[in-house]
Amino acid sequence: MDAGLHHLQGTAAHLTVVALGSNLGDRRAHLAYAVSRLETLLERLRVSPFIESAFVGDPSLGPQPSYLNGVVVGSSRSDPATLLRELHAIERARGRTRPHAQAPRTLDLDLILMGNLTVRTPEVVIPHPRFRERRFVLEPLAAVAPDLVDPMSGRTVRELLAVLDEVDQPLPSRPSTLHSPGPREAM
Image (cartoon, rainbow, N blue to C red; front, side, top):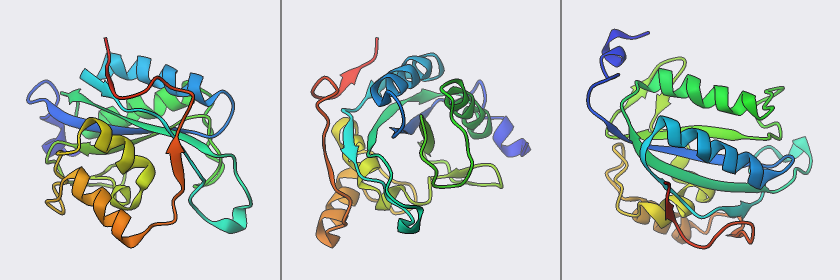
């Protein structure tokens, strides 16, 4: 591990954003499990509403079930590589396999942001390179942290979402009826 990243553990806490998604099995149960596990990894956890979204990817893979997506925002003292390993362990606990990059999944957890950190290693890339283009990340994130600033672009989540609205991205999403309305603080 990069010595520059290792020193983060146990020191300053970083505002951390993790995106959650599921399109196989009991999607709501998979996301609820992830939130309960993330409550042990992140402090002061805020959970977005969940939204339904269509598969975004290679159409040659054929149709896929729709996703249930959301985000959590909390504070982490872990280094990015350690946190990412923990996220992968949570995915595996729910039966996540990785036969190919855009395969359907029981649970998908993406590390989106960690404060103002920018990390580019073979294992970890922060900020997530495509989150600015993904309504299924920005829309739930705007519900719990609209003024959070992307360290790369300098734009707030609200502004990034407005850019998507201007471009009219074809990412259909609608609020899910499978969740309680509005953001909440995790207990």
